[in-house]
Image (cartoon, rainbow, N blue to C red; front, side, top):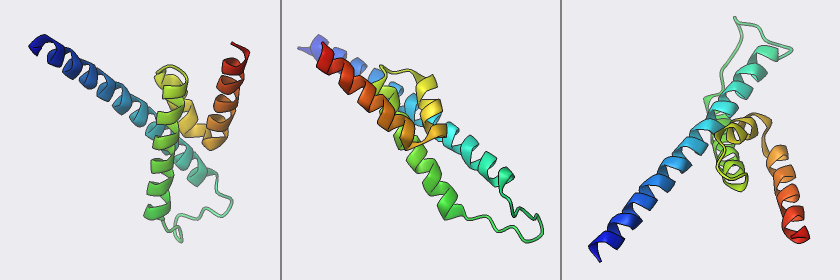
Length: 106
């Protein structure tokens, strides 16, 4: 019985590590996207620029969730989470449709 509980704990720790990596990769993609968006802004003037922390933080949060979900859909690949964090929910929707089509064919 003790051995079984240790195996479960190891499995939980492994899954937690995977989830953390996926979430951080998605957040990193969102961070890059946000910074690129700021630097590409048409009306960027350093003297009058006001940074919106709430919007930026919400963008990172959504990217983190999107990256986590896409990484888990695509069999735990952190690179997919990074890309999904950058590309946003459009990529997640496409991956879901692709994966769903594969399940129907099998």
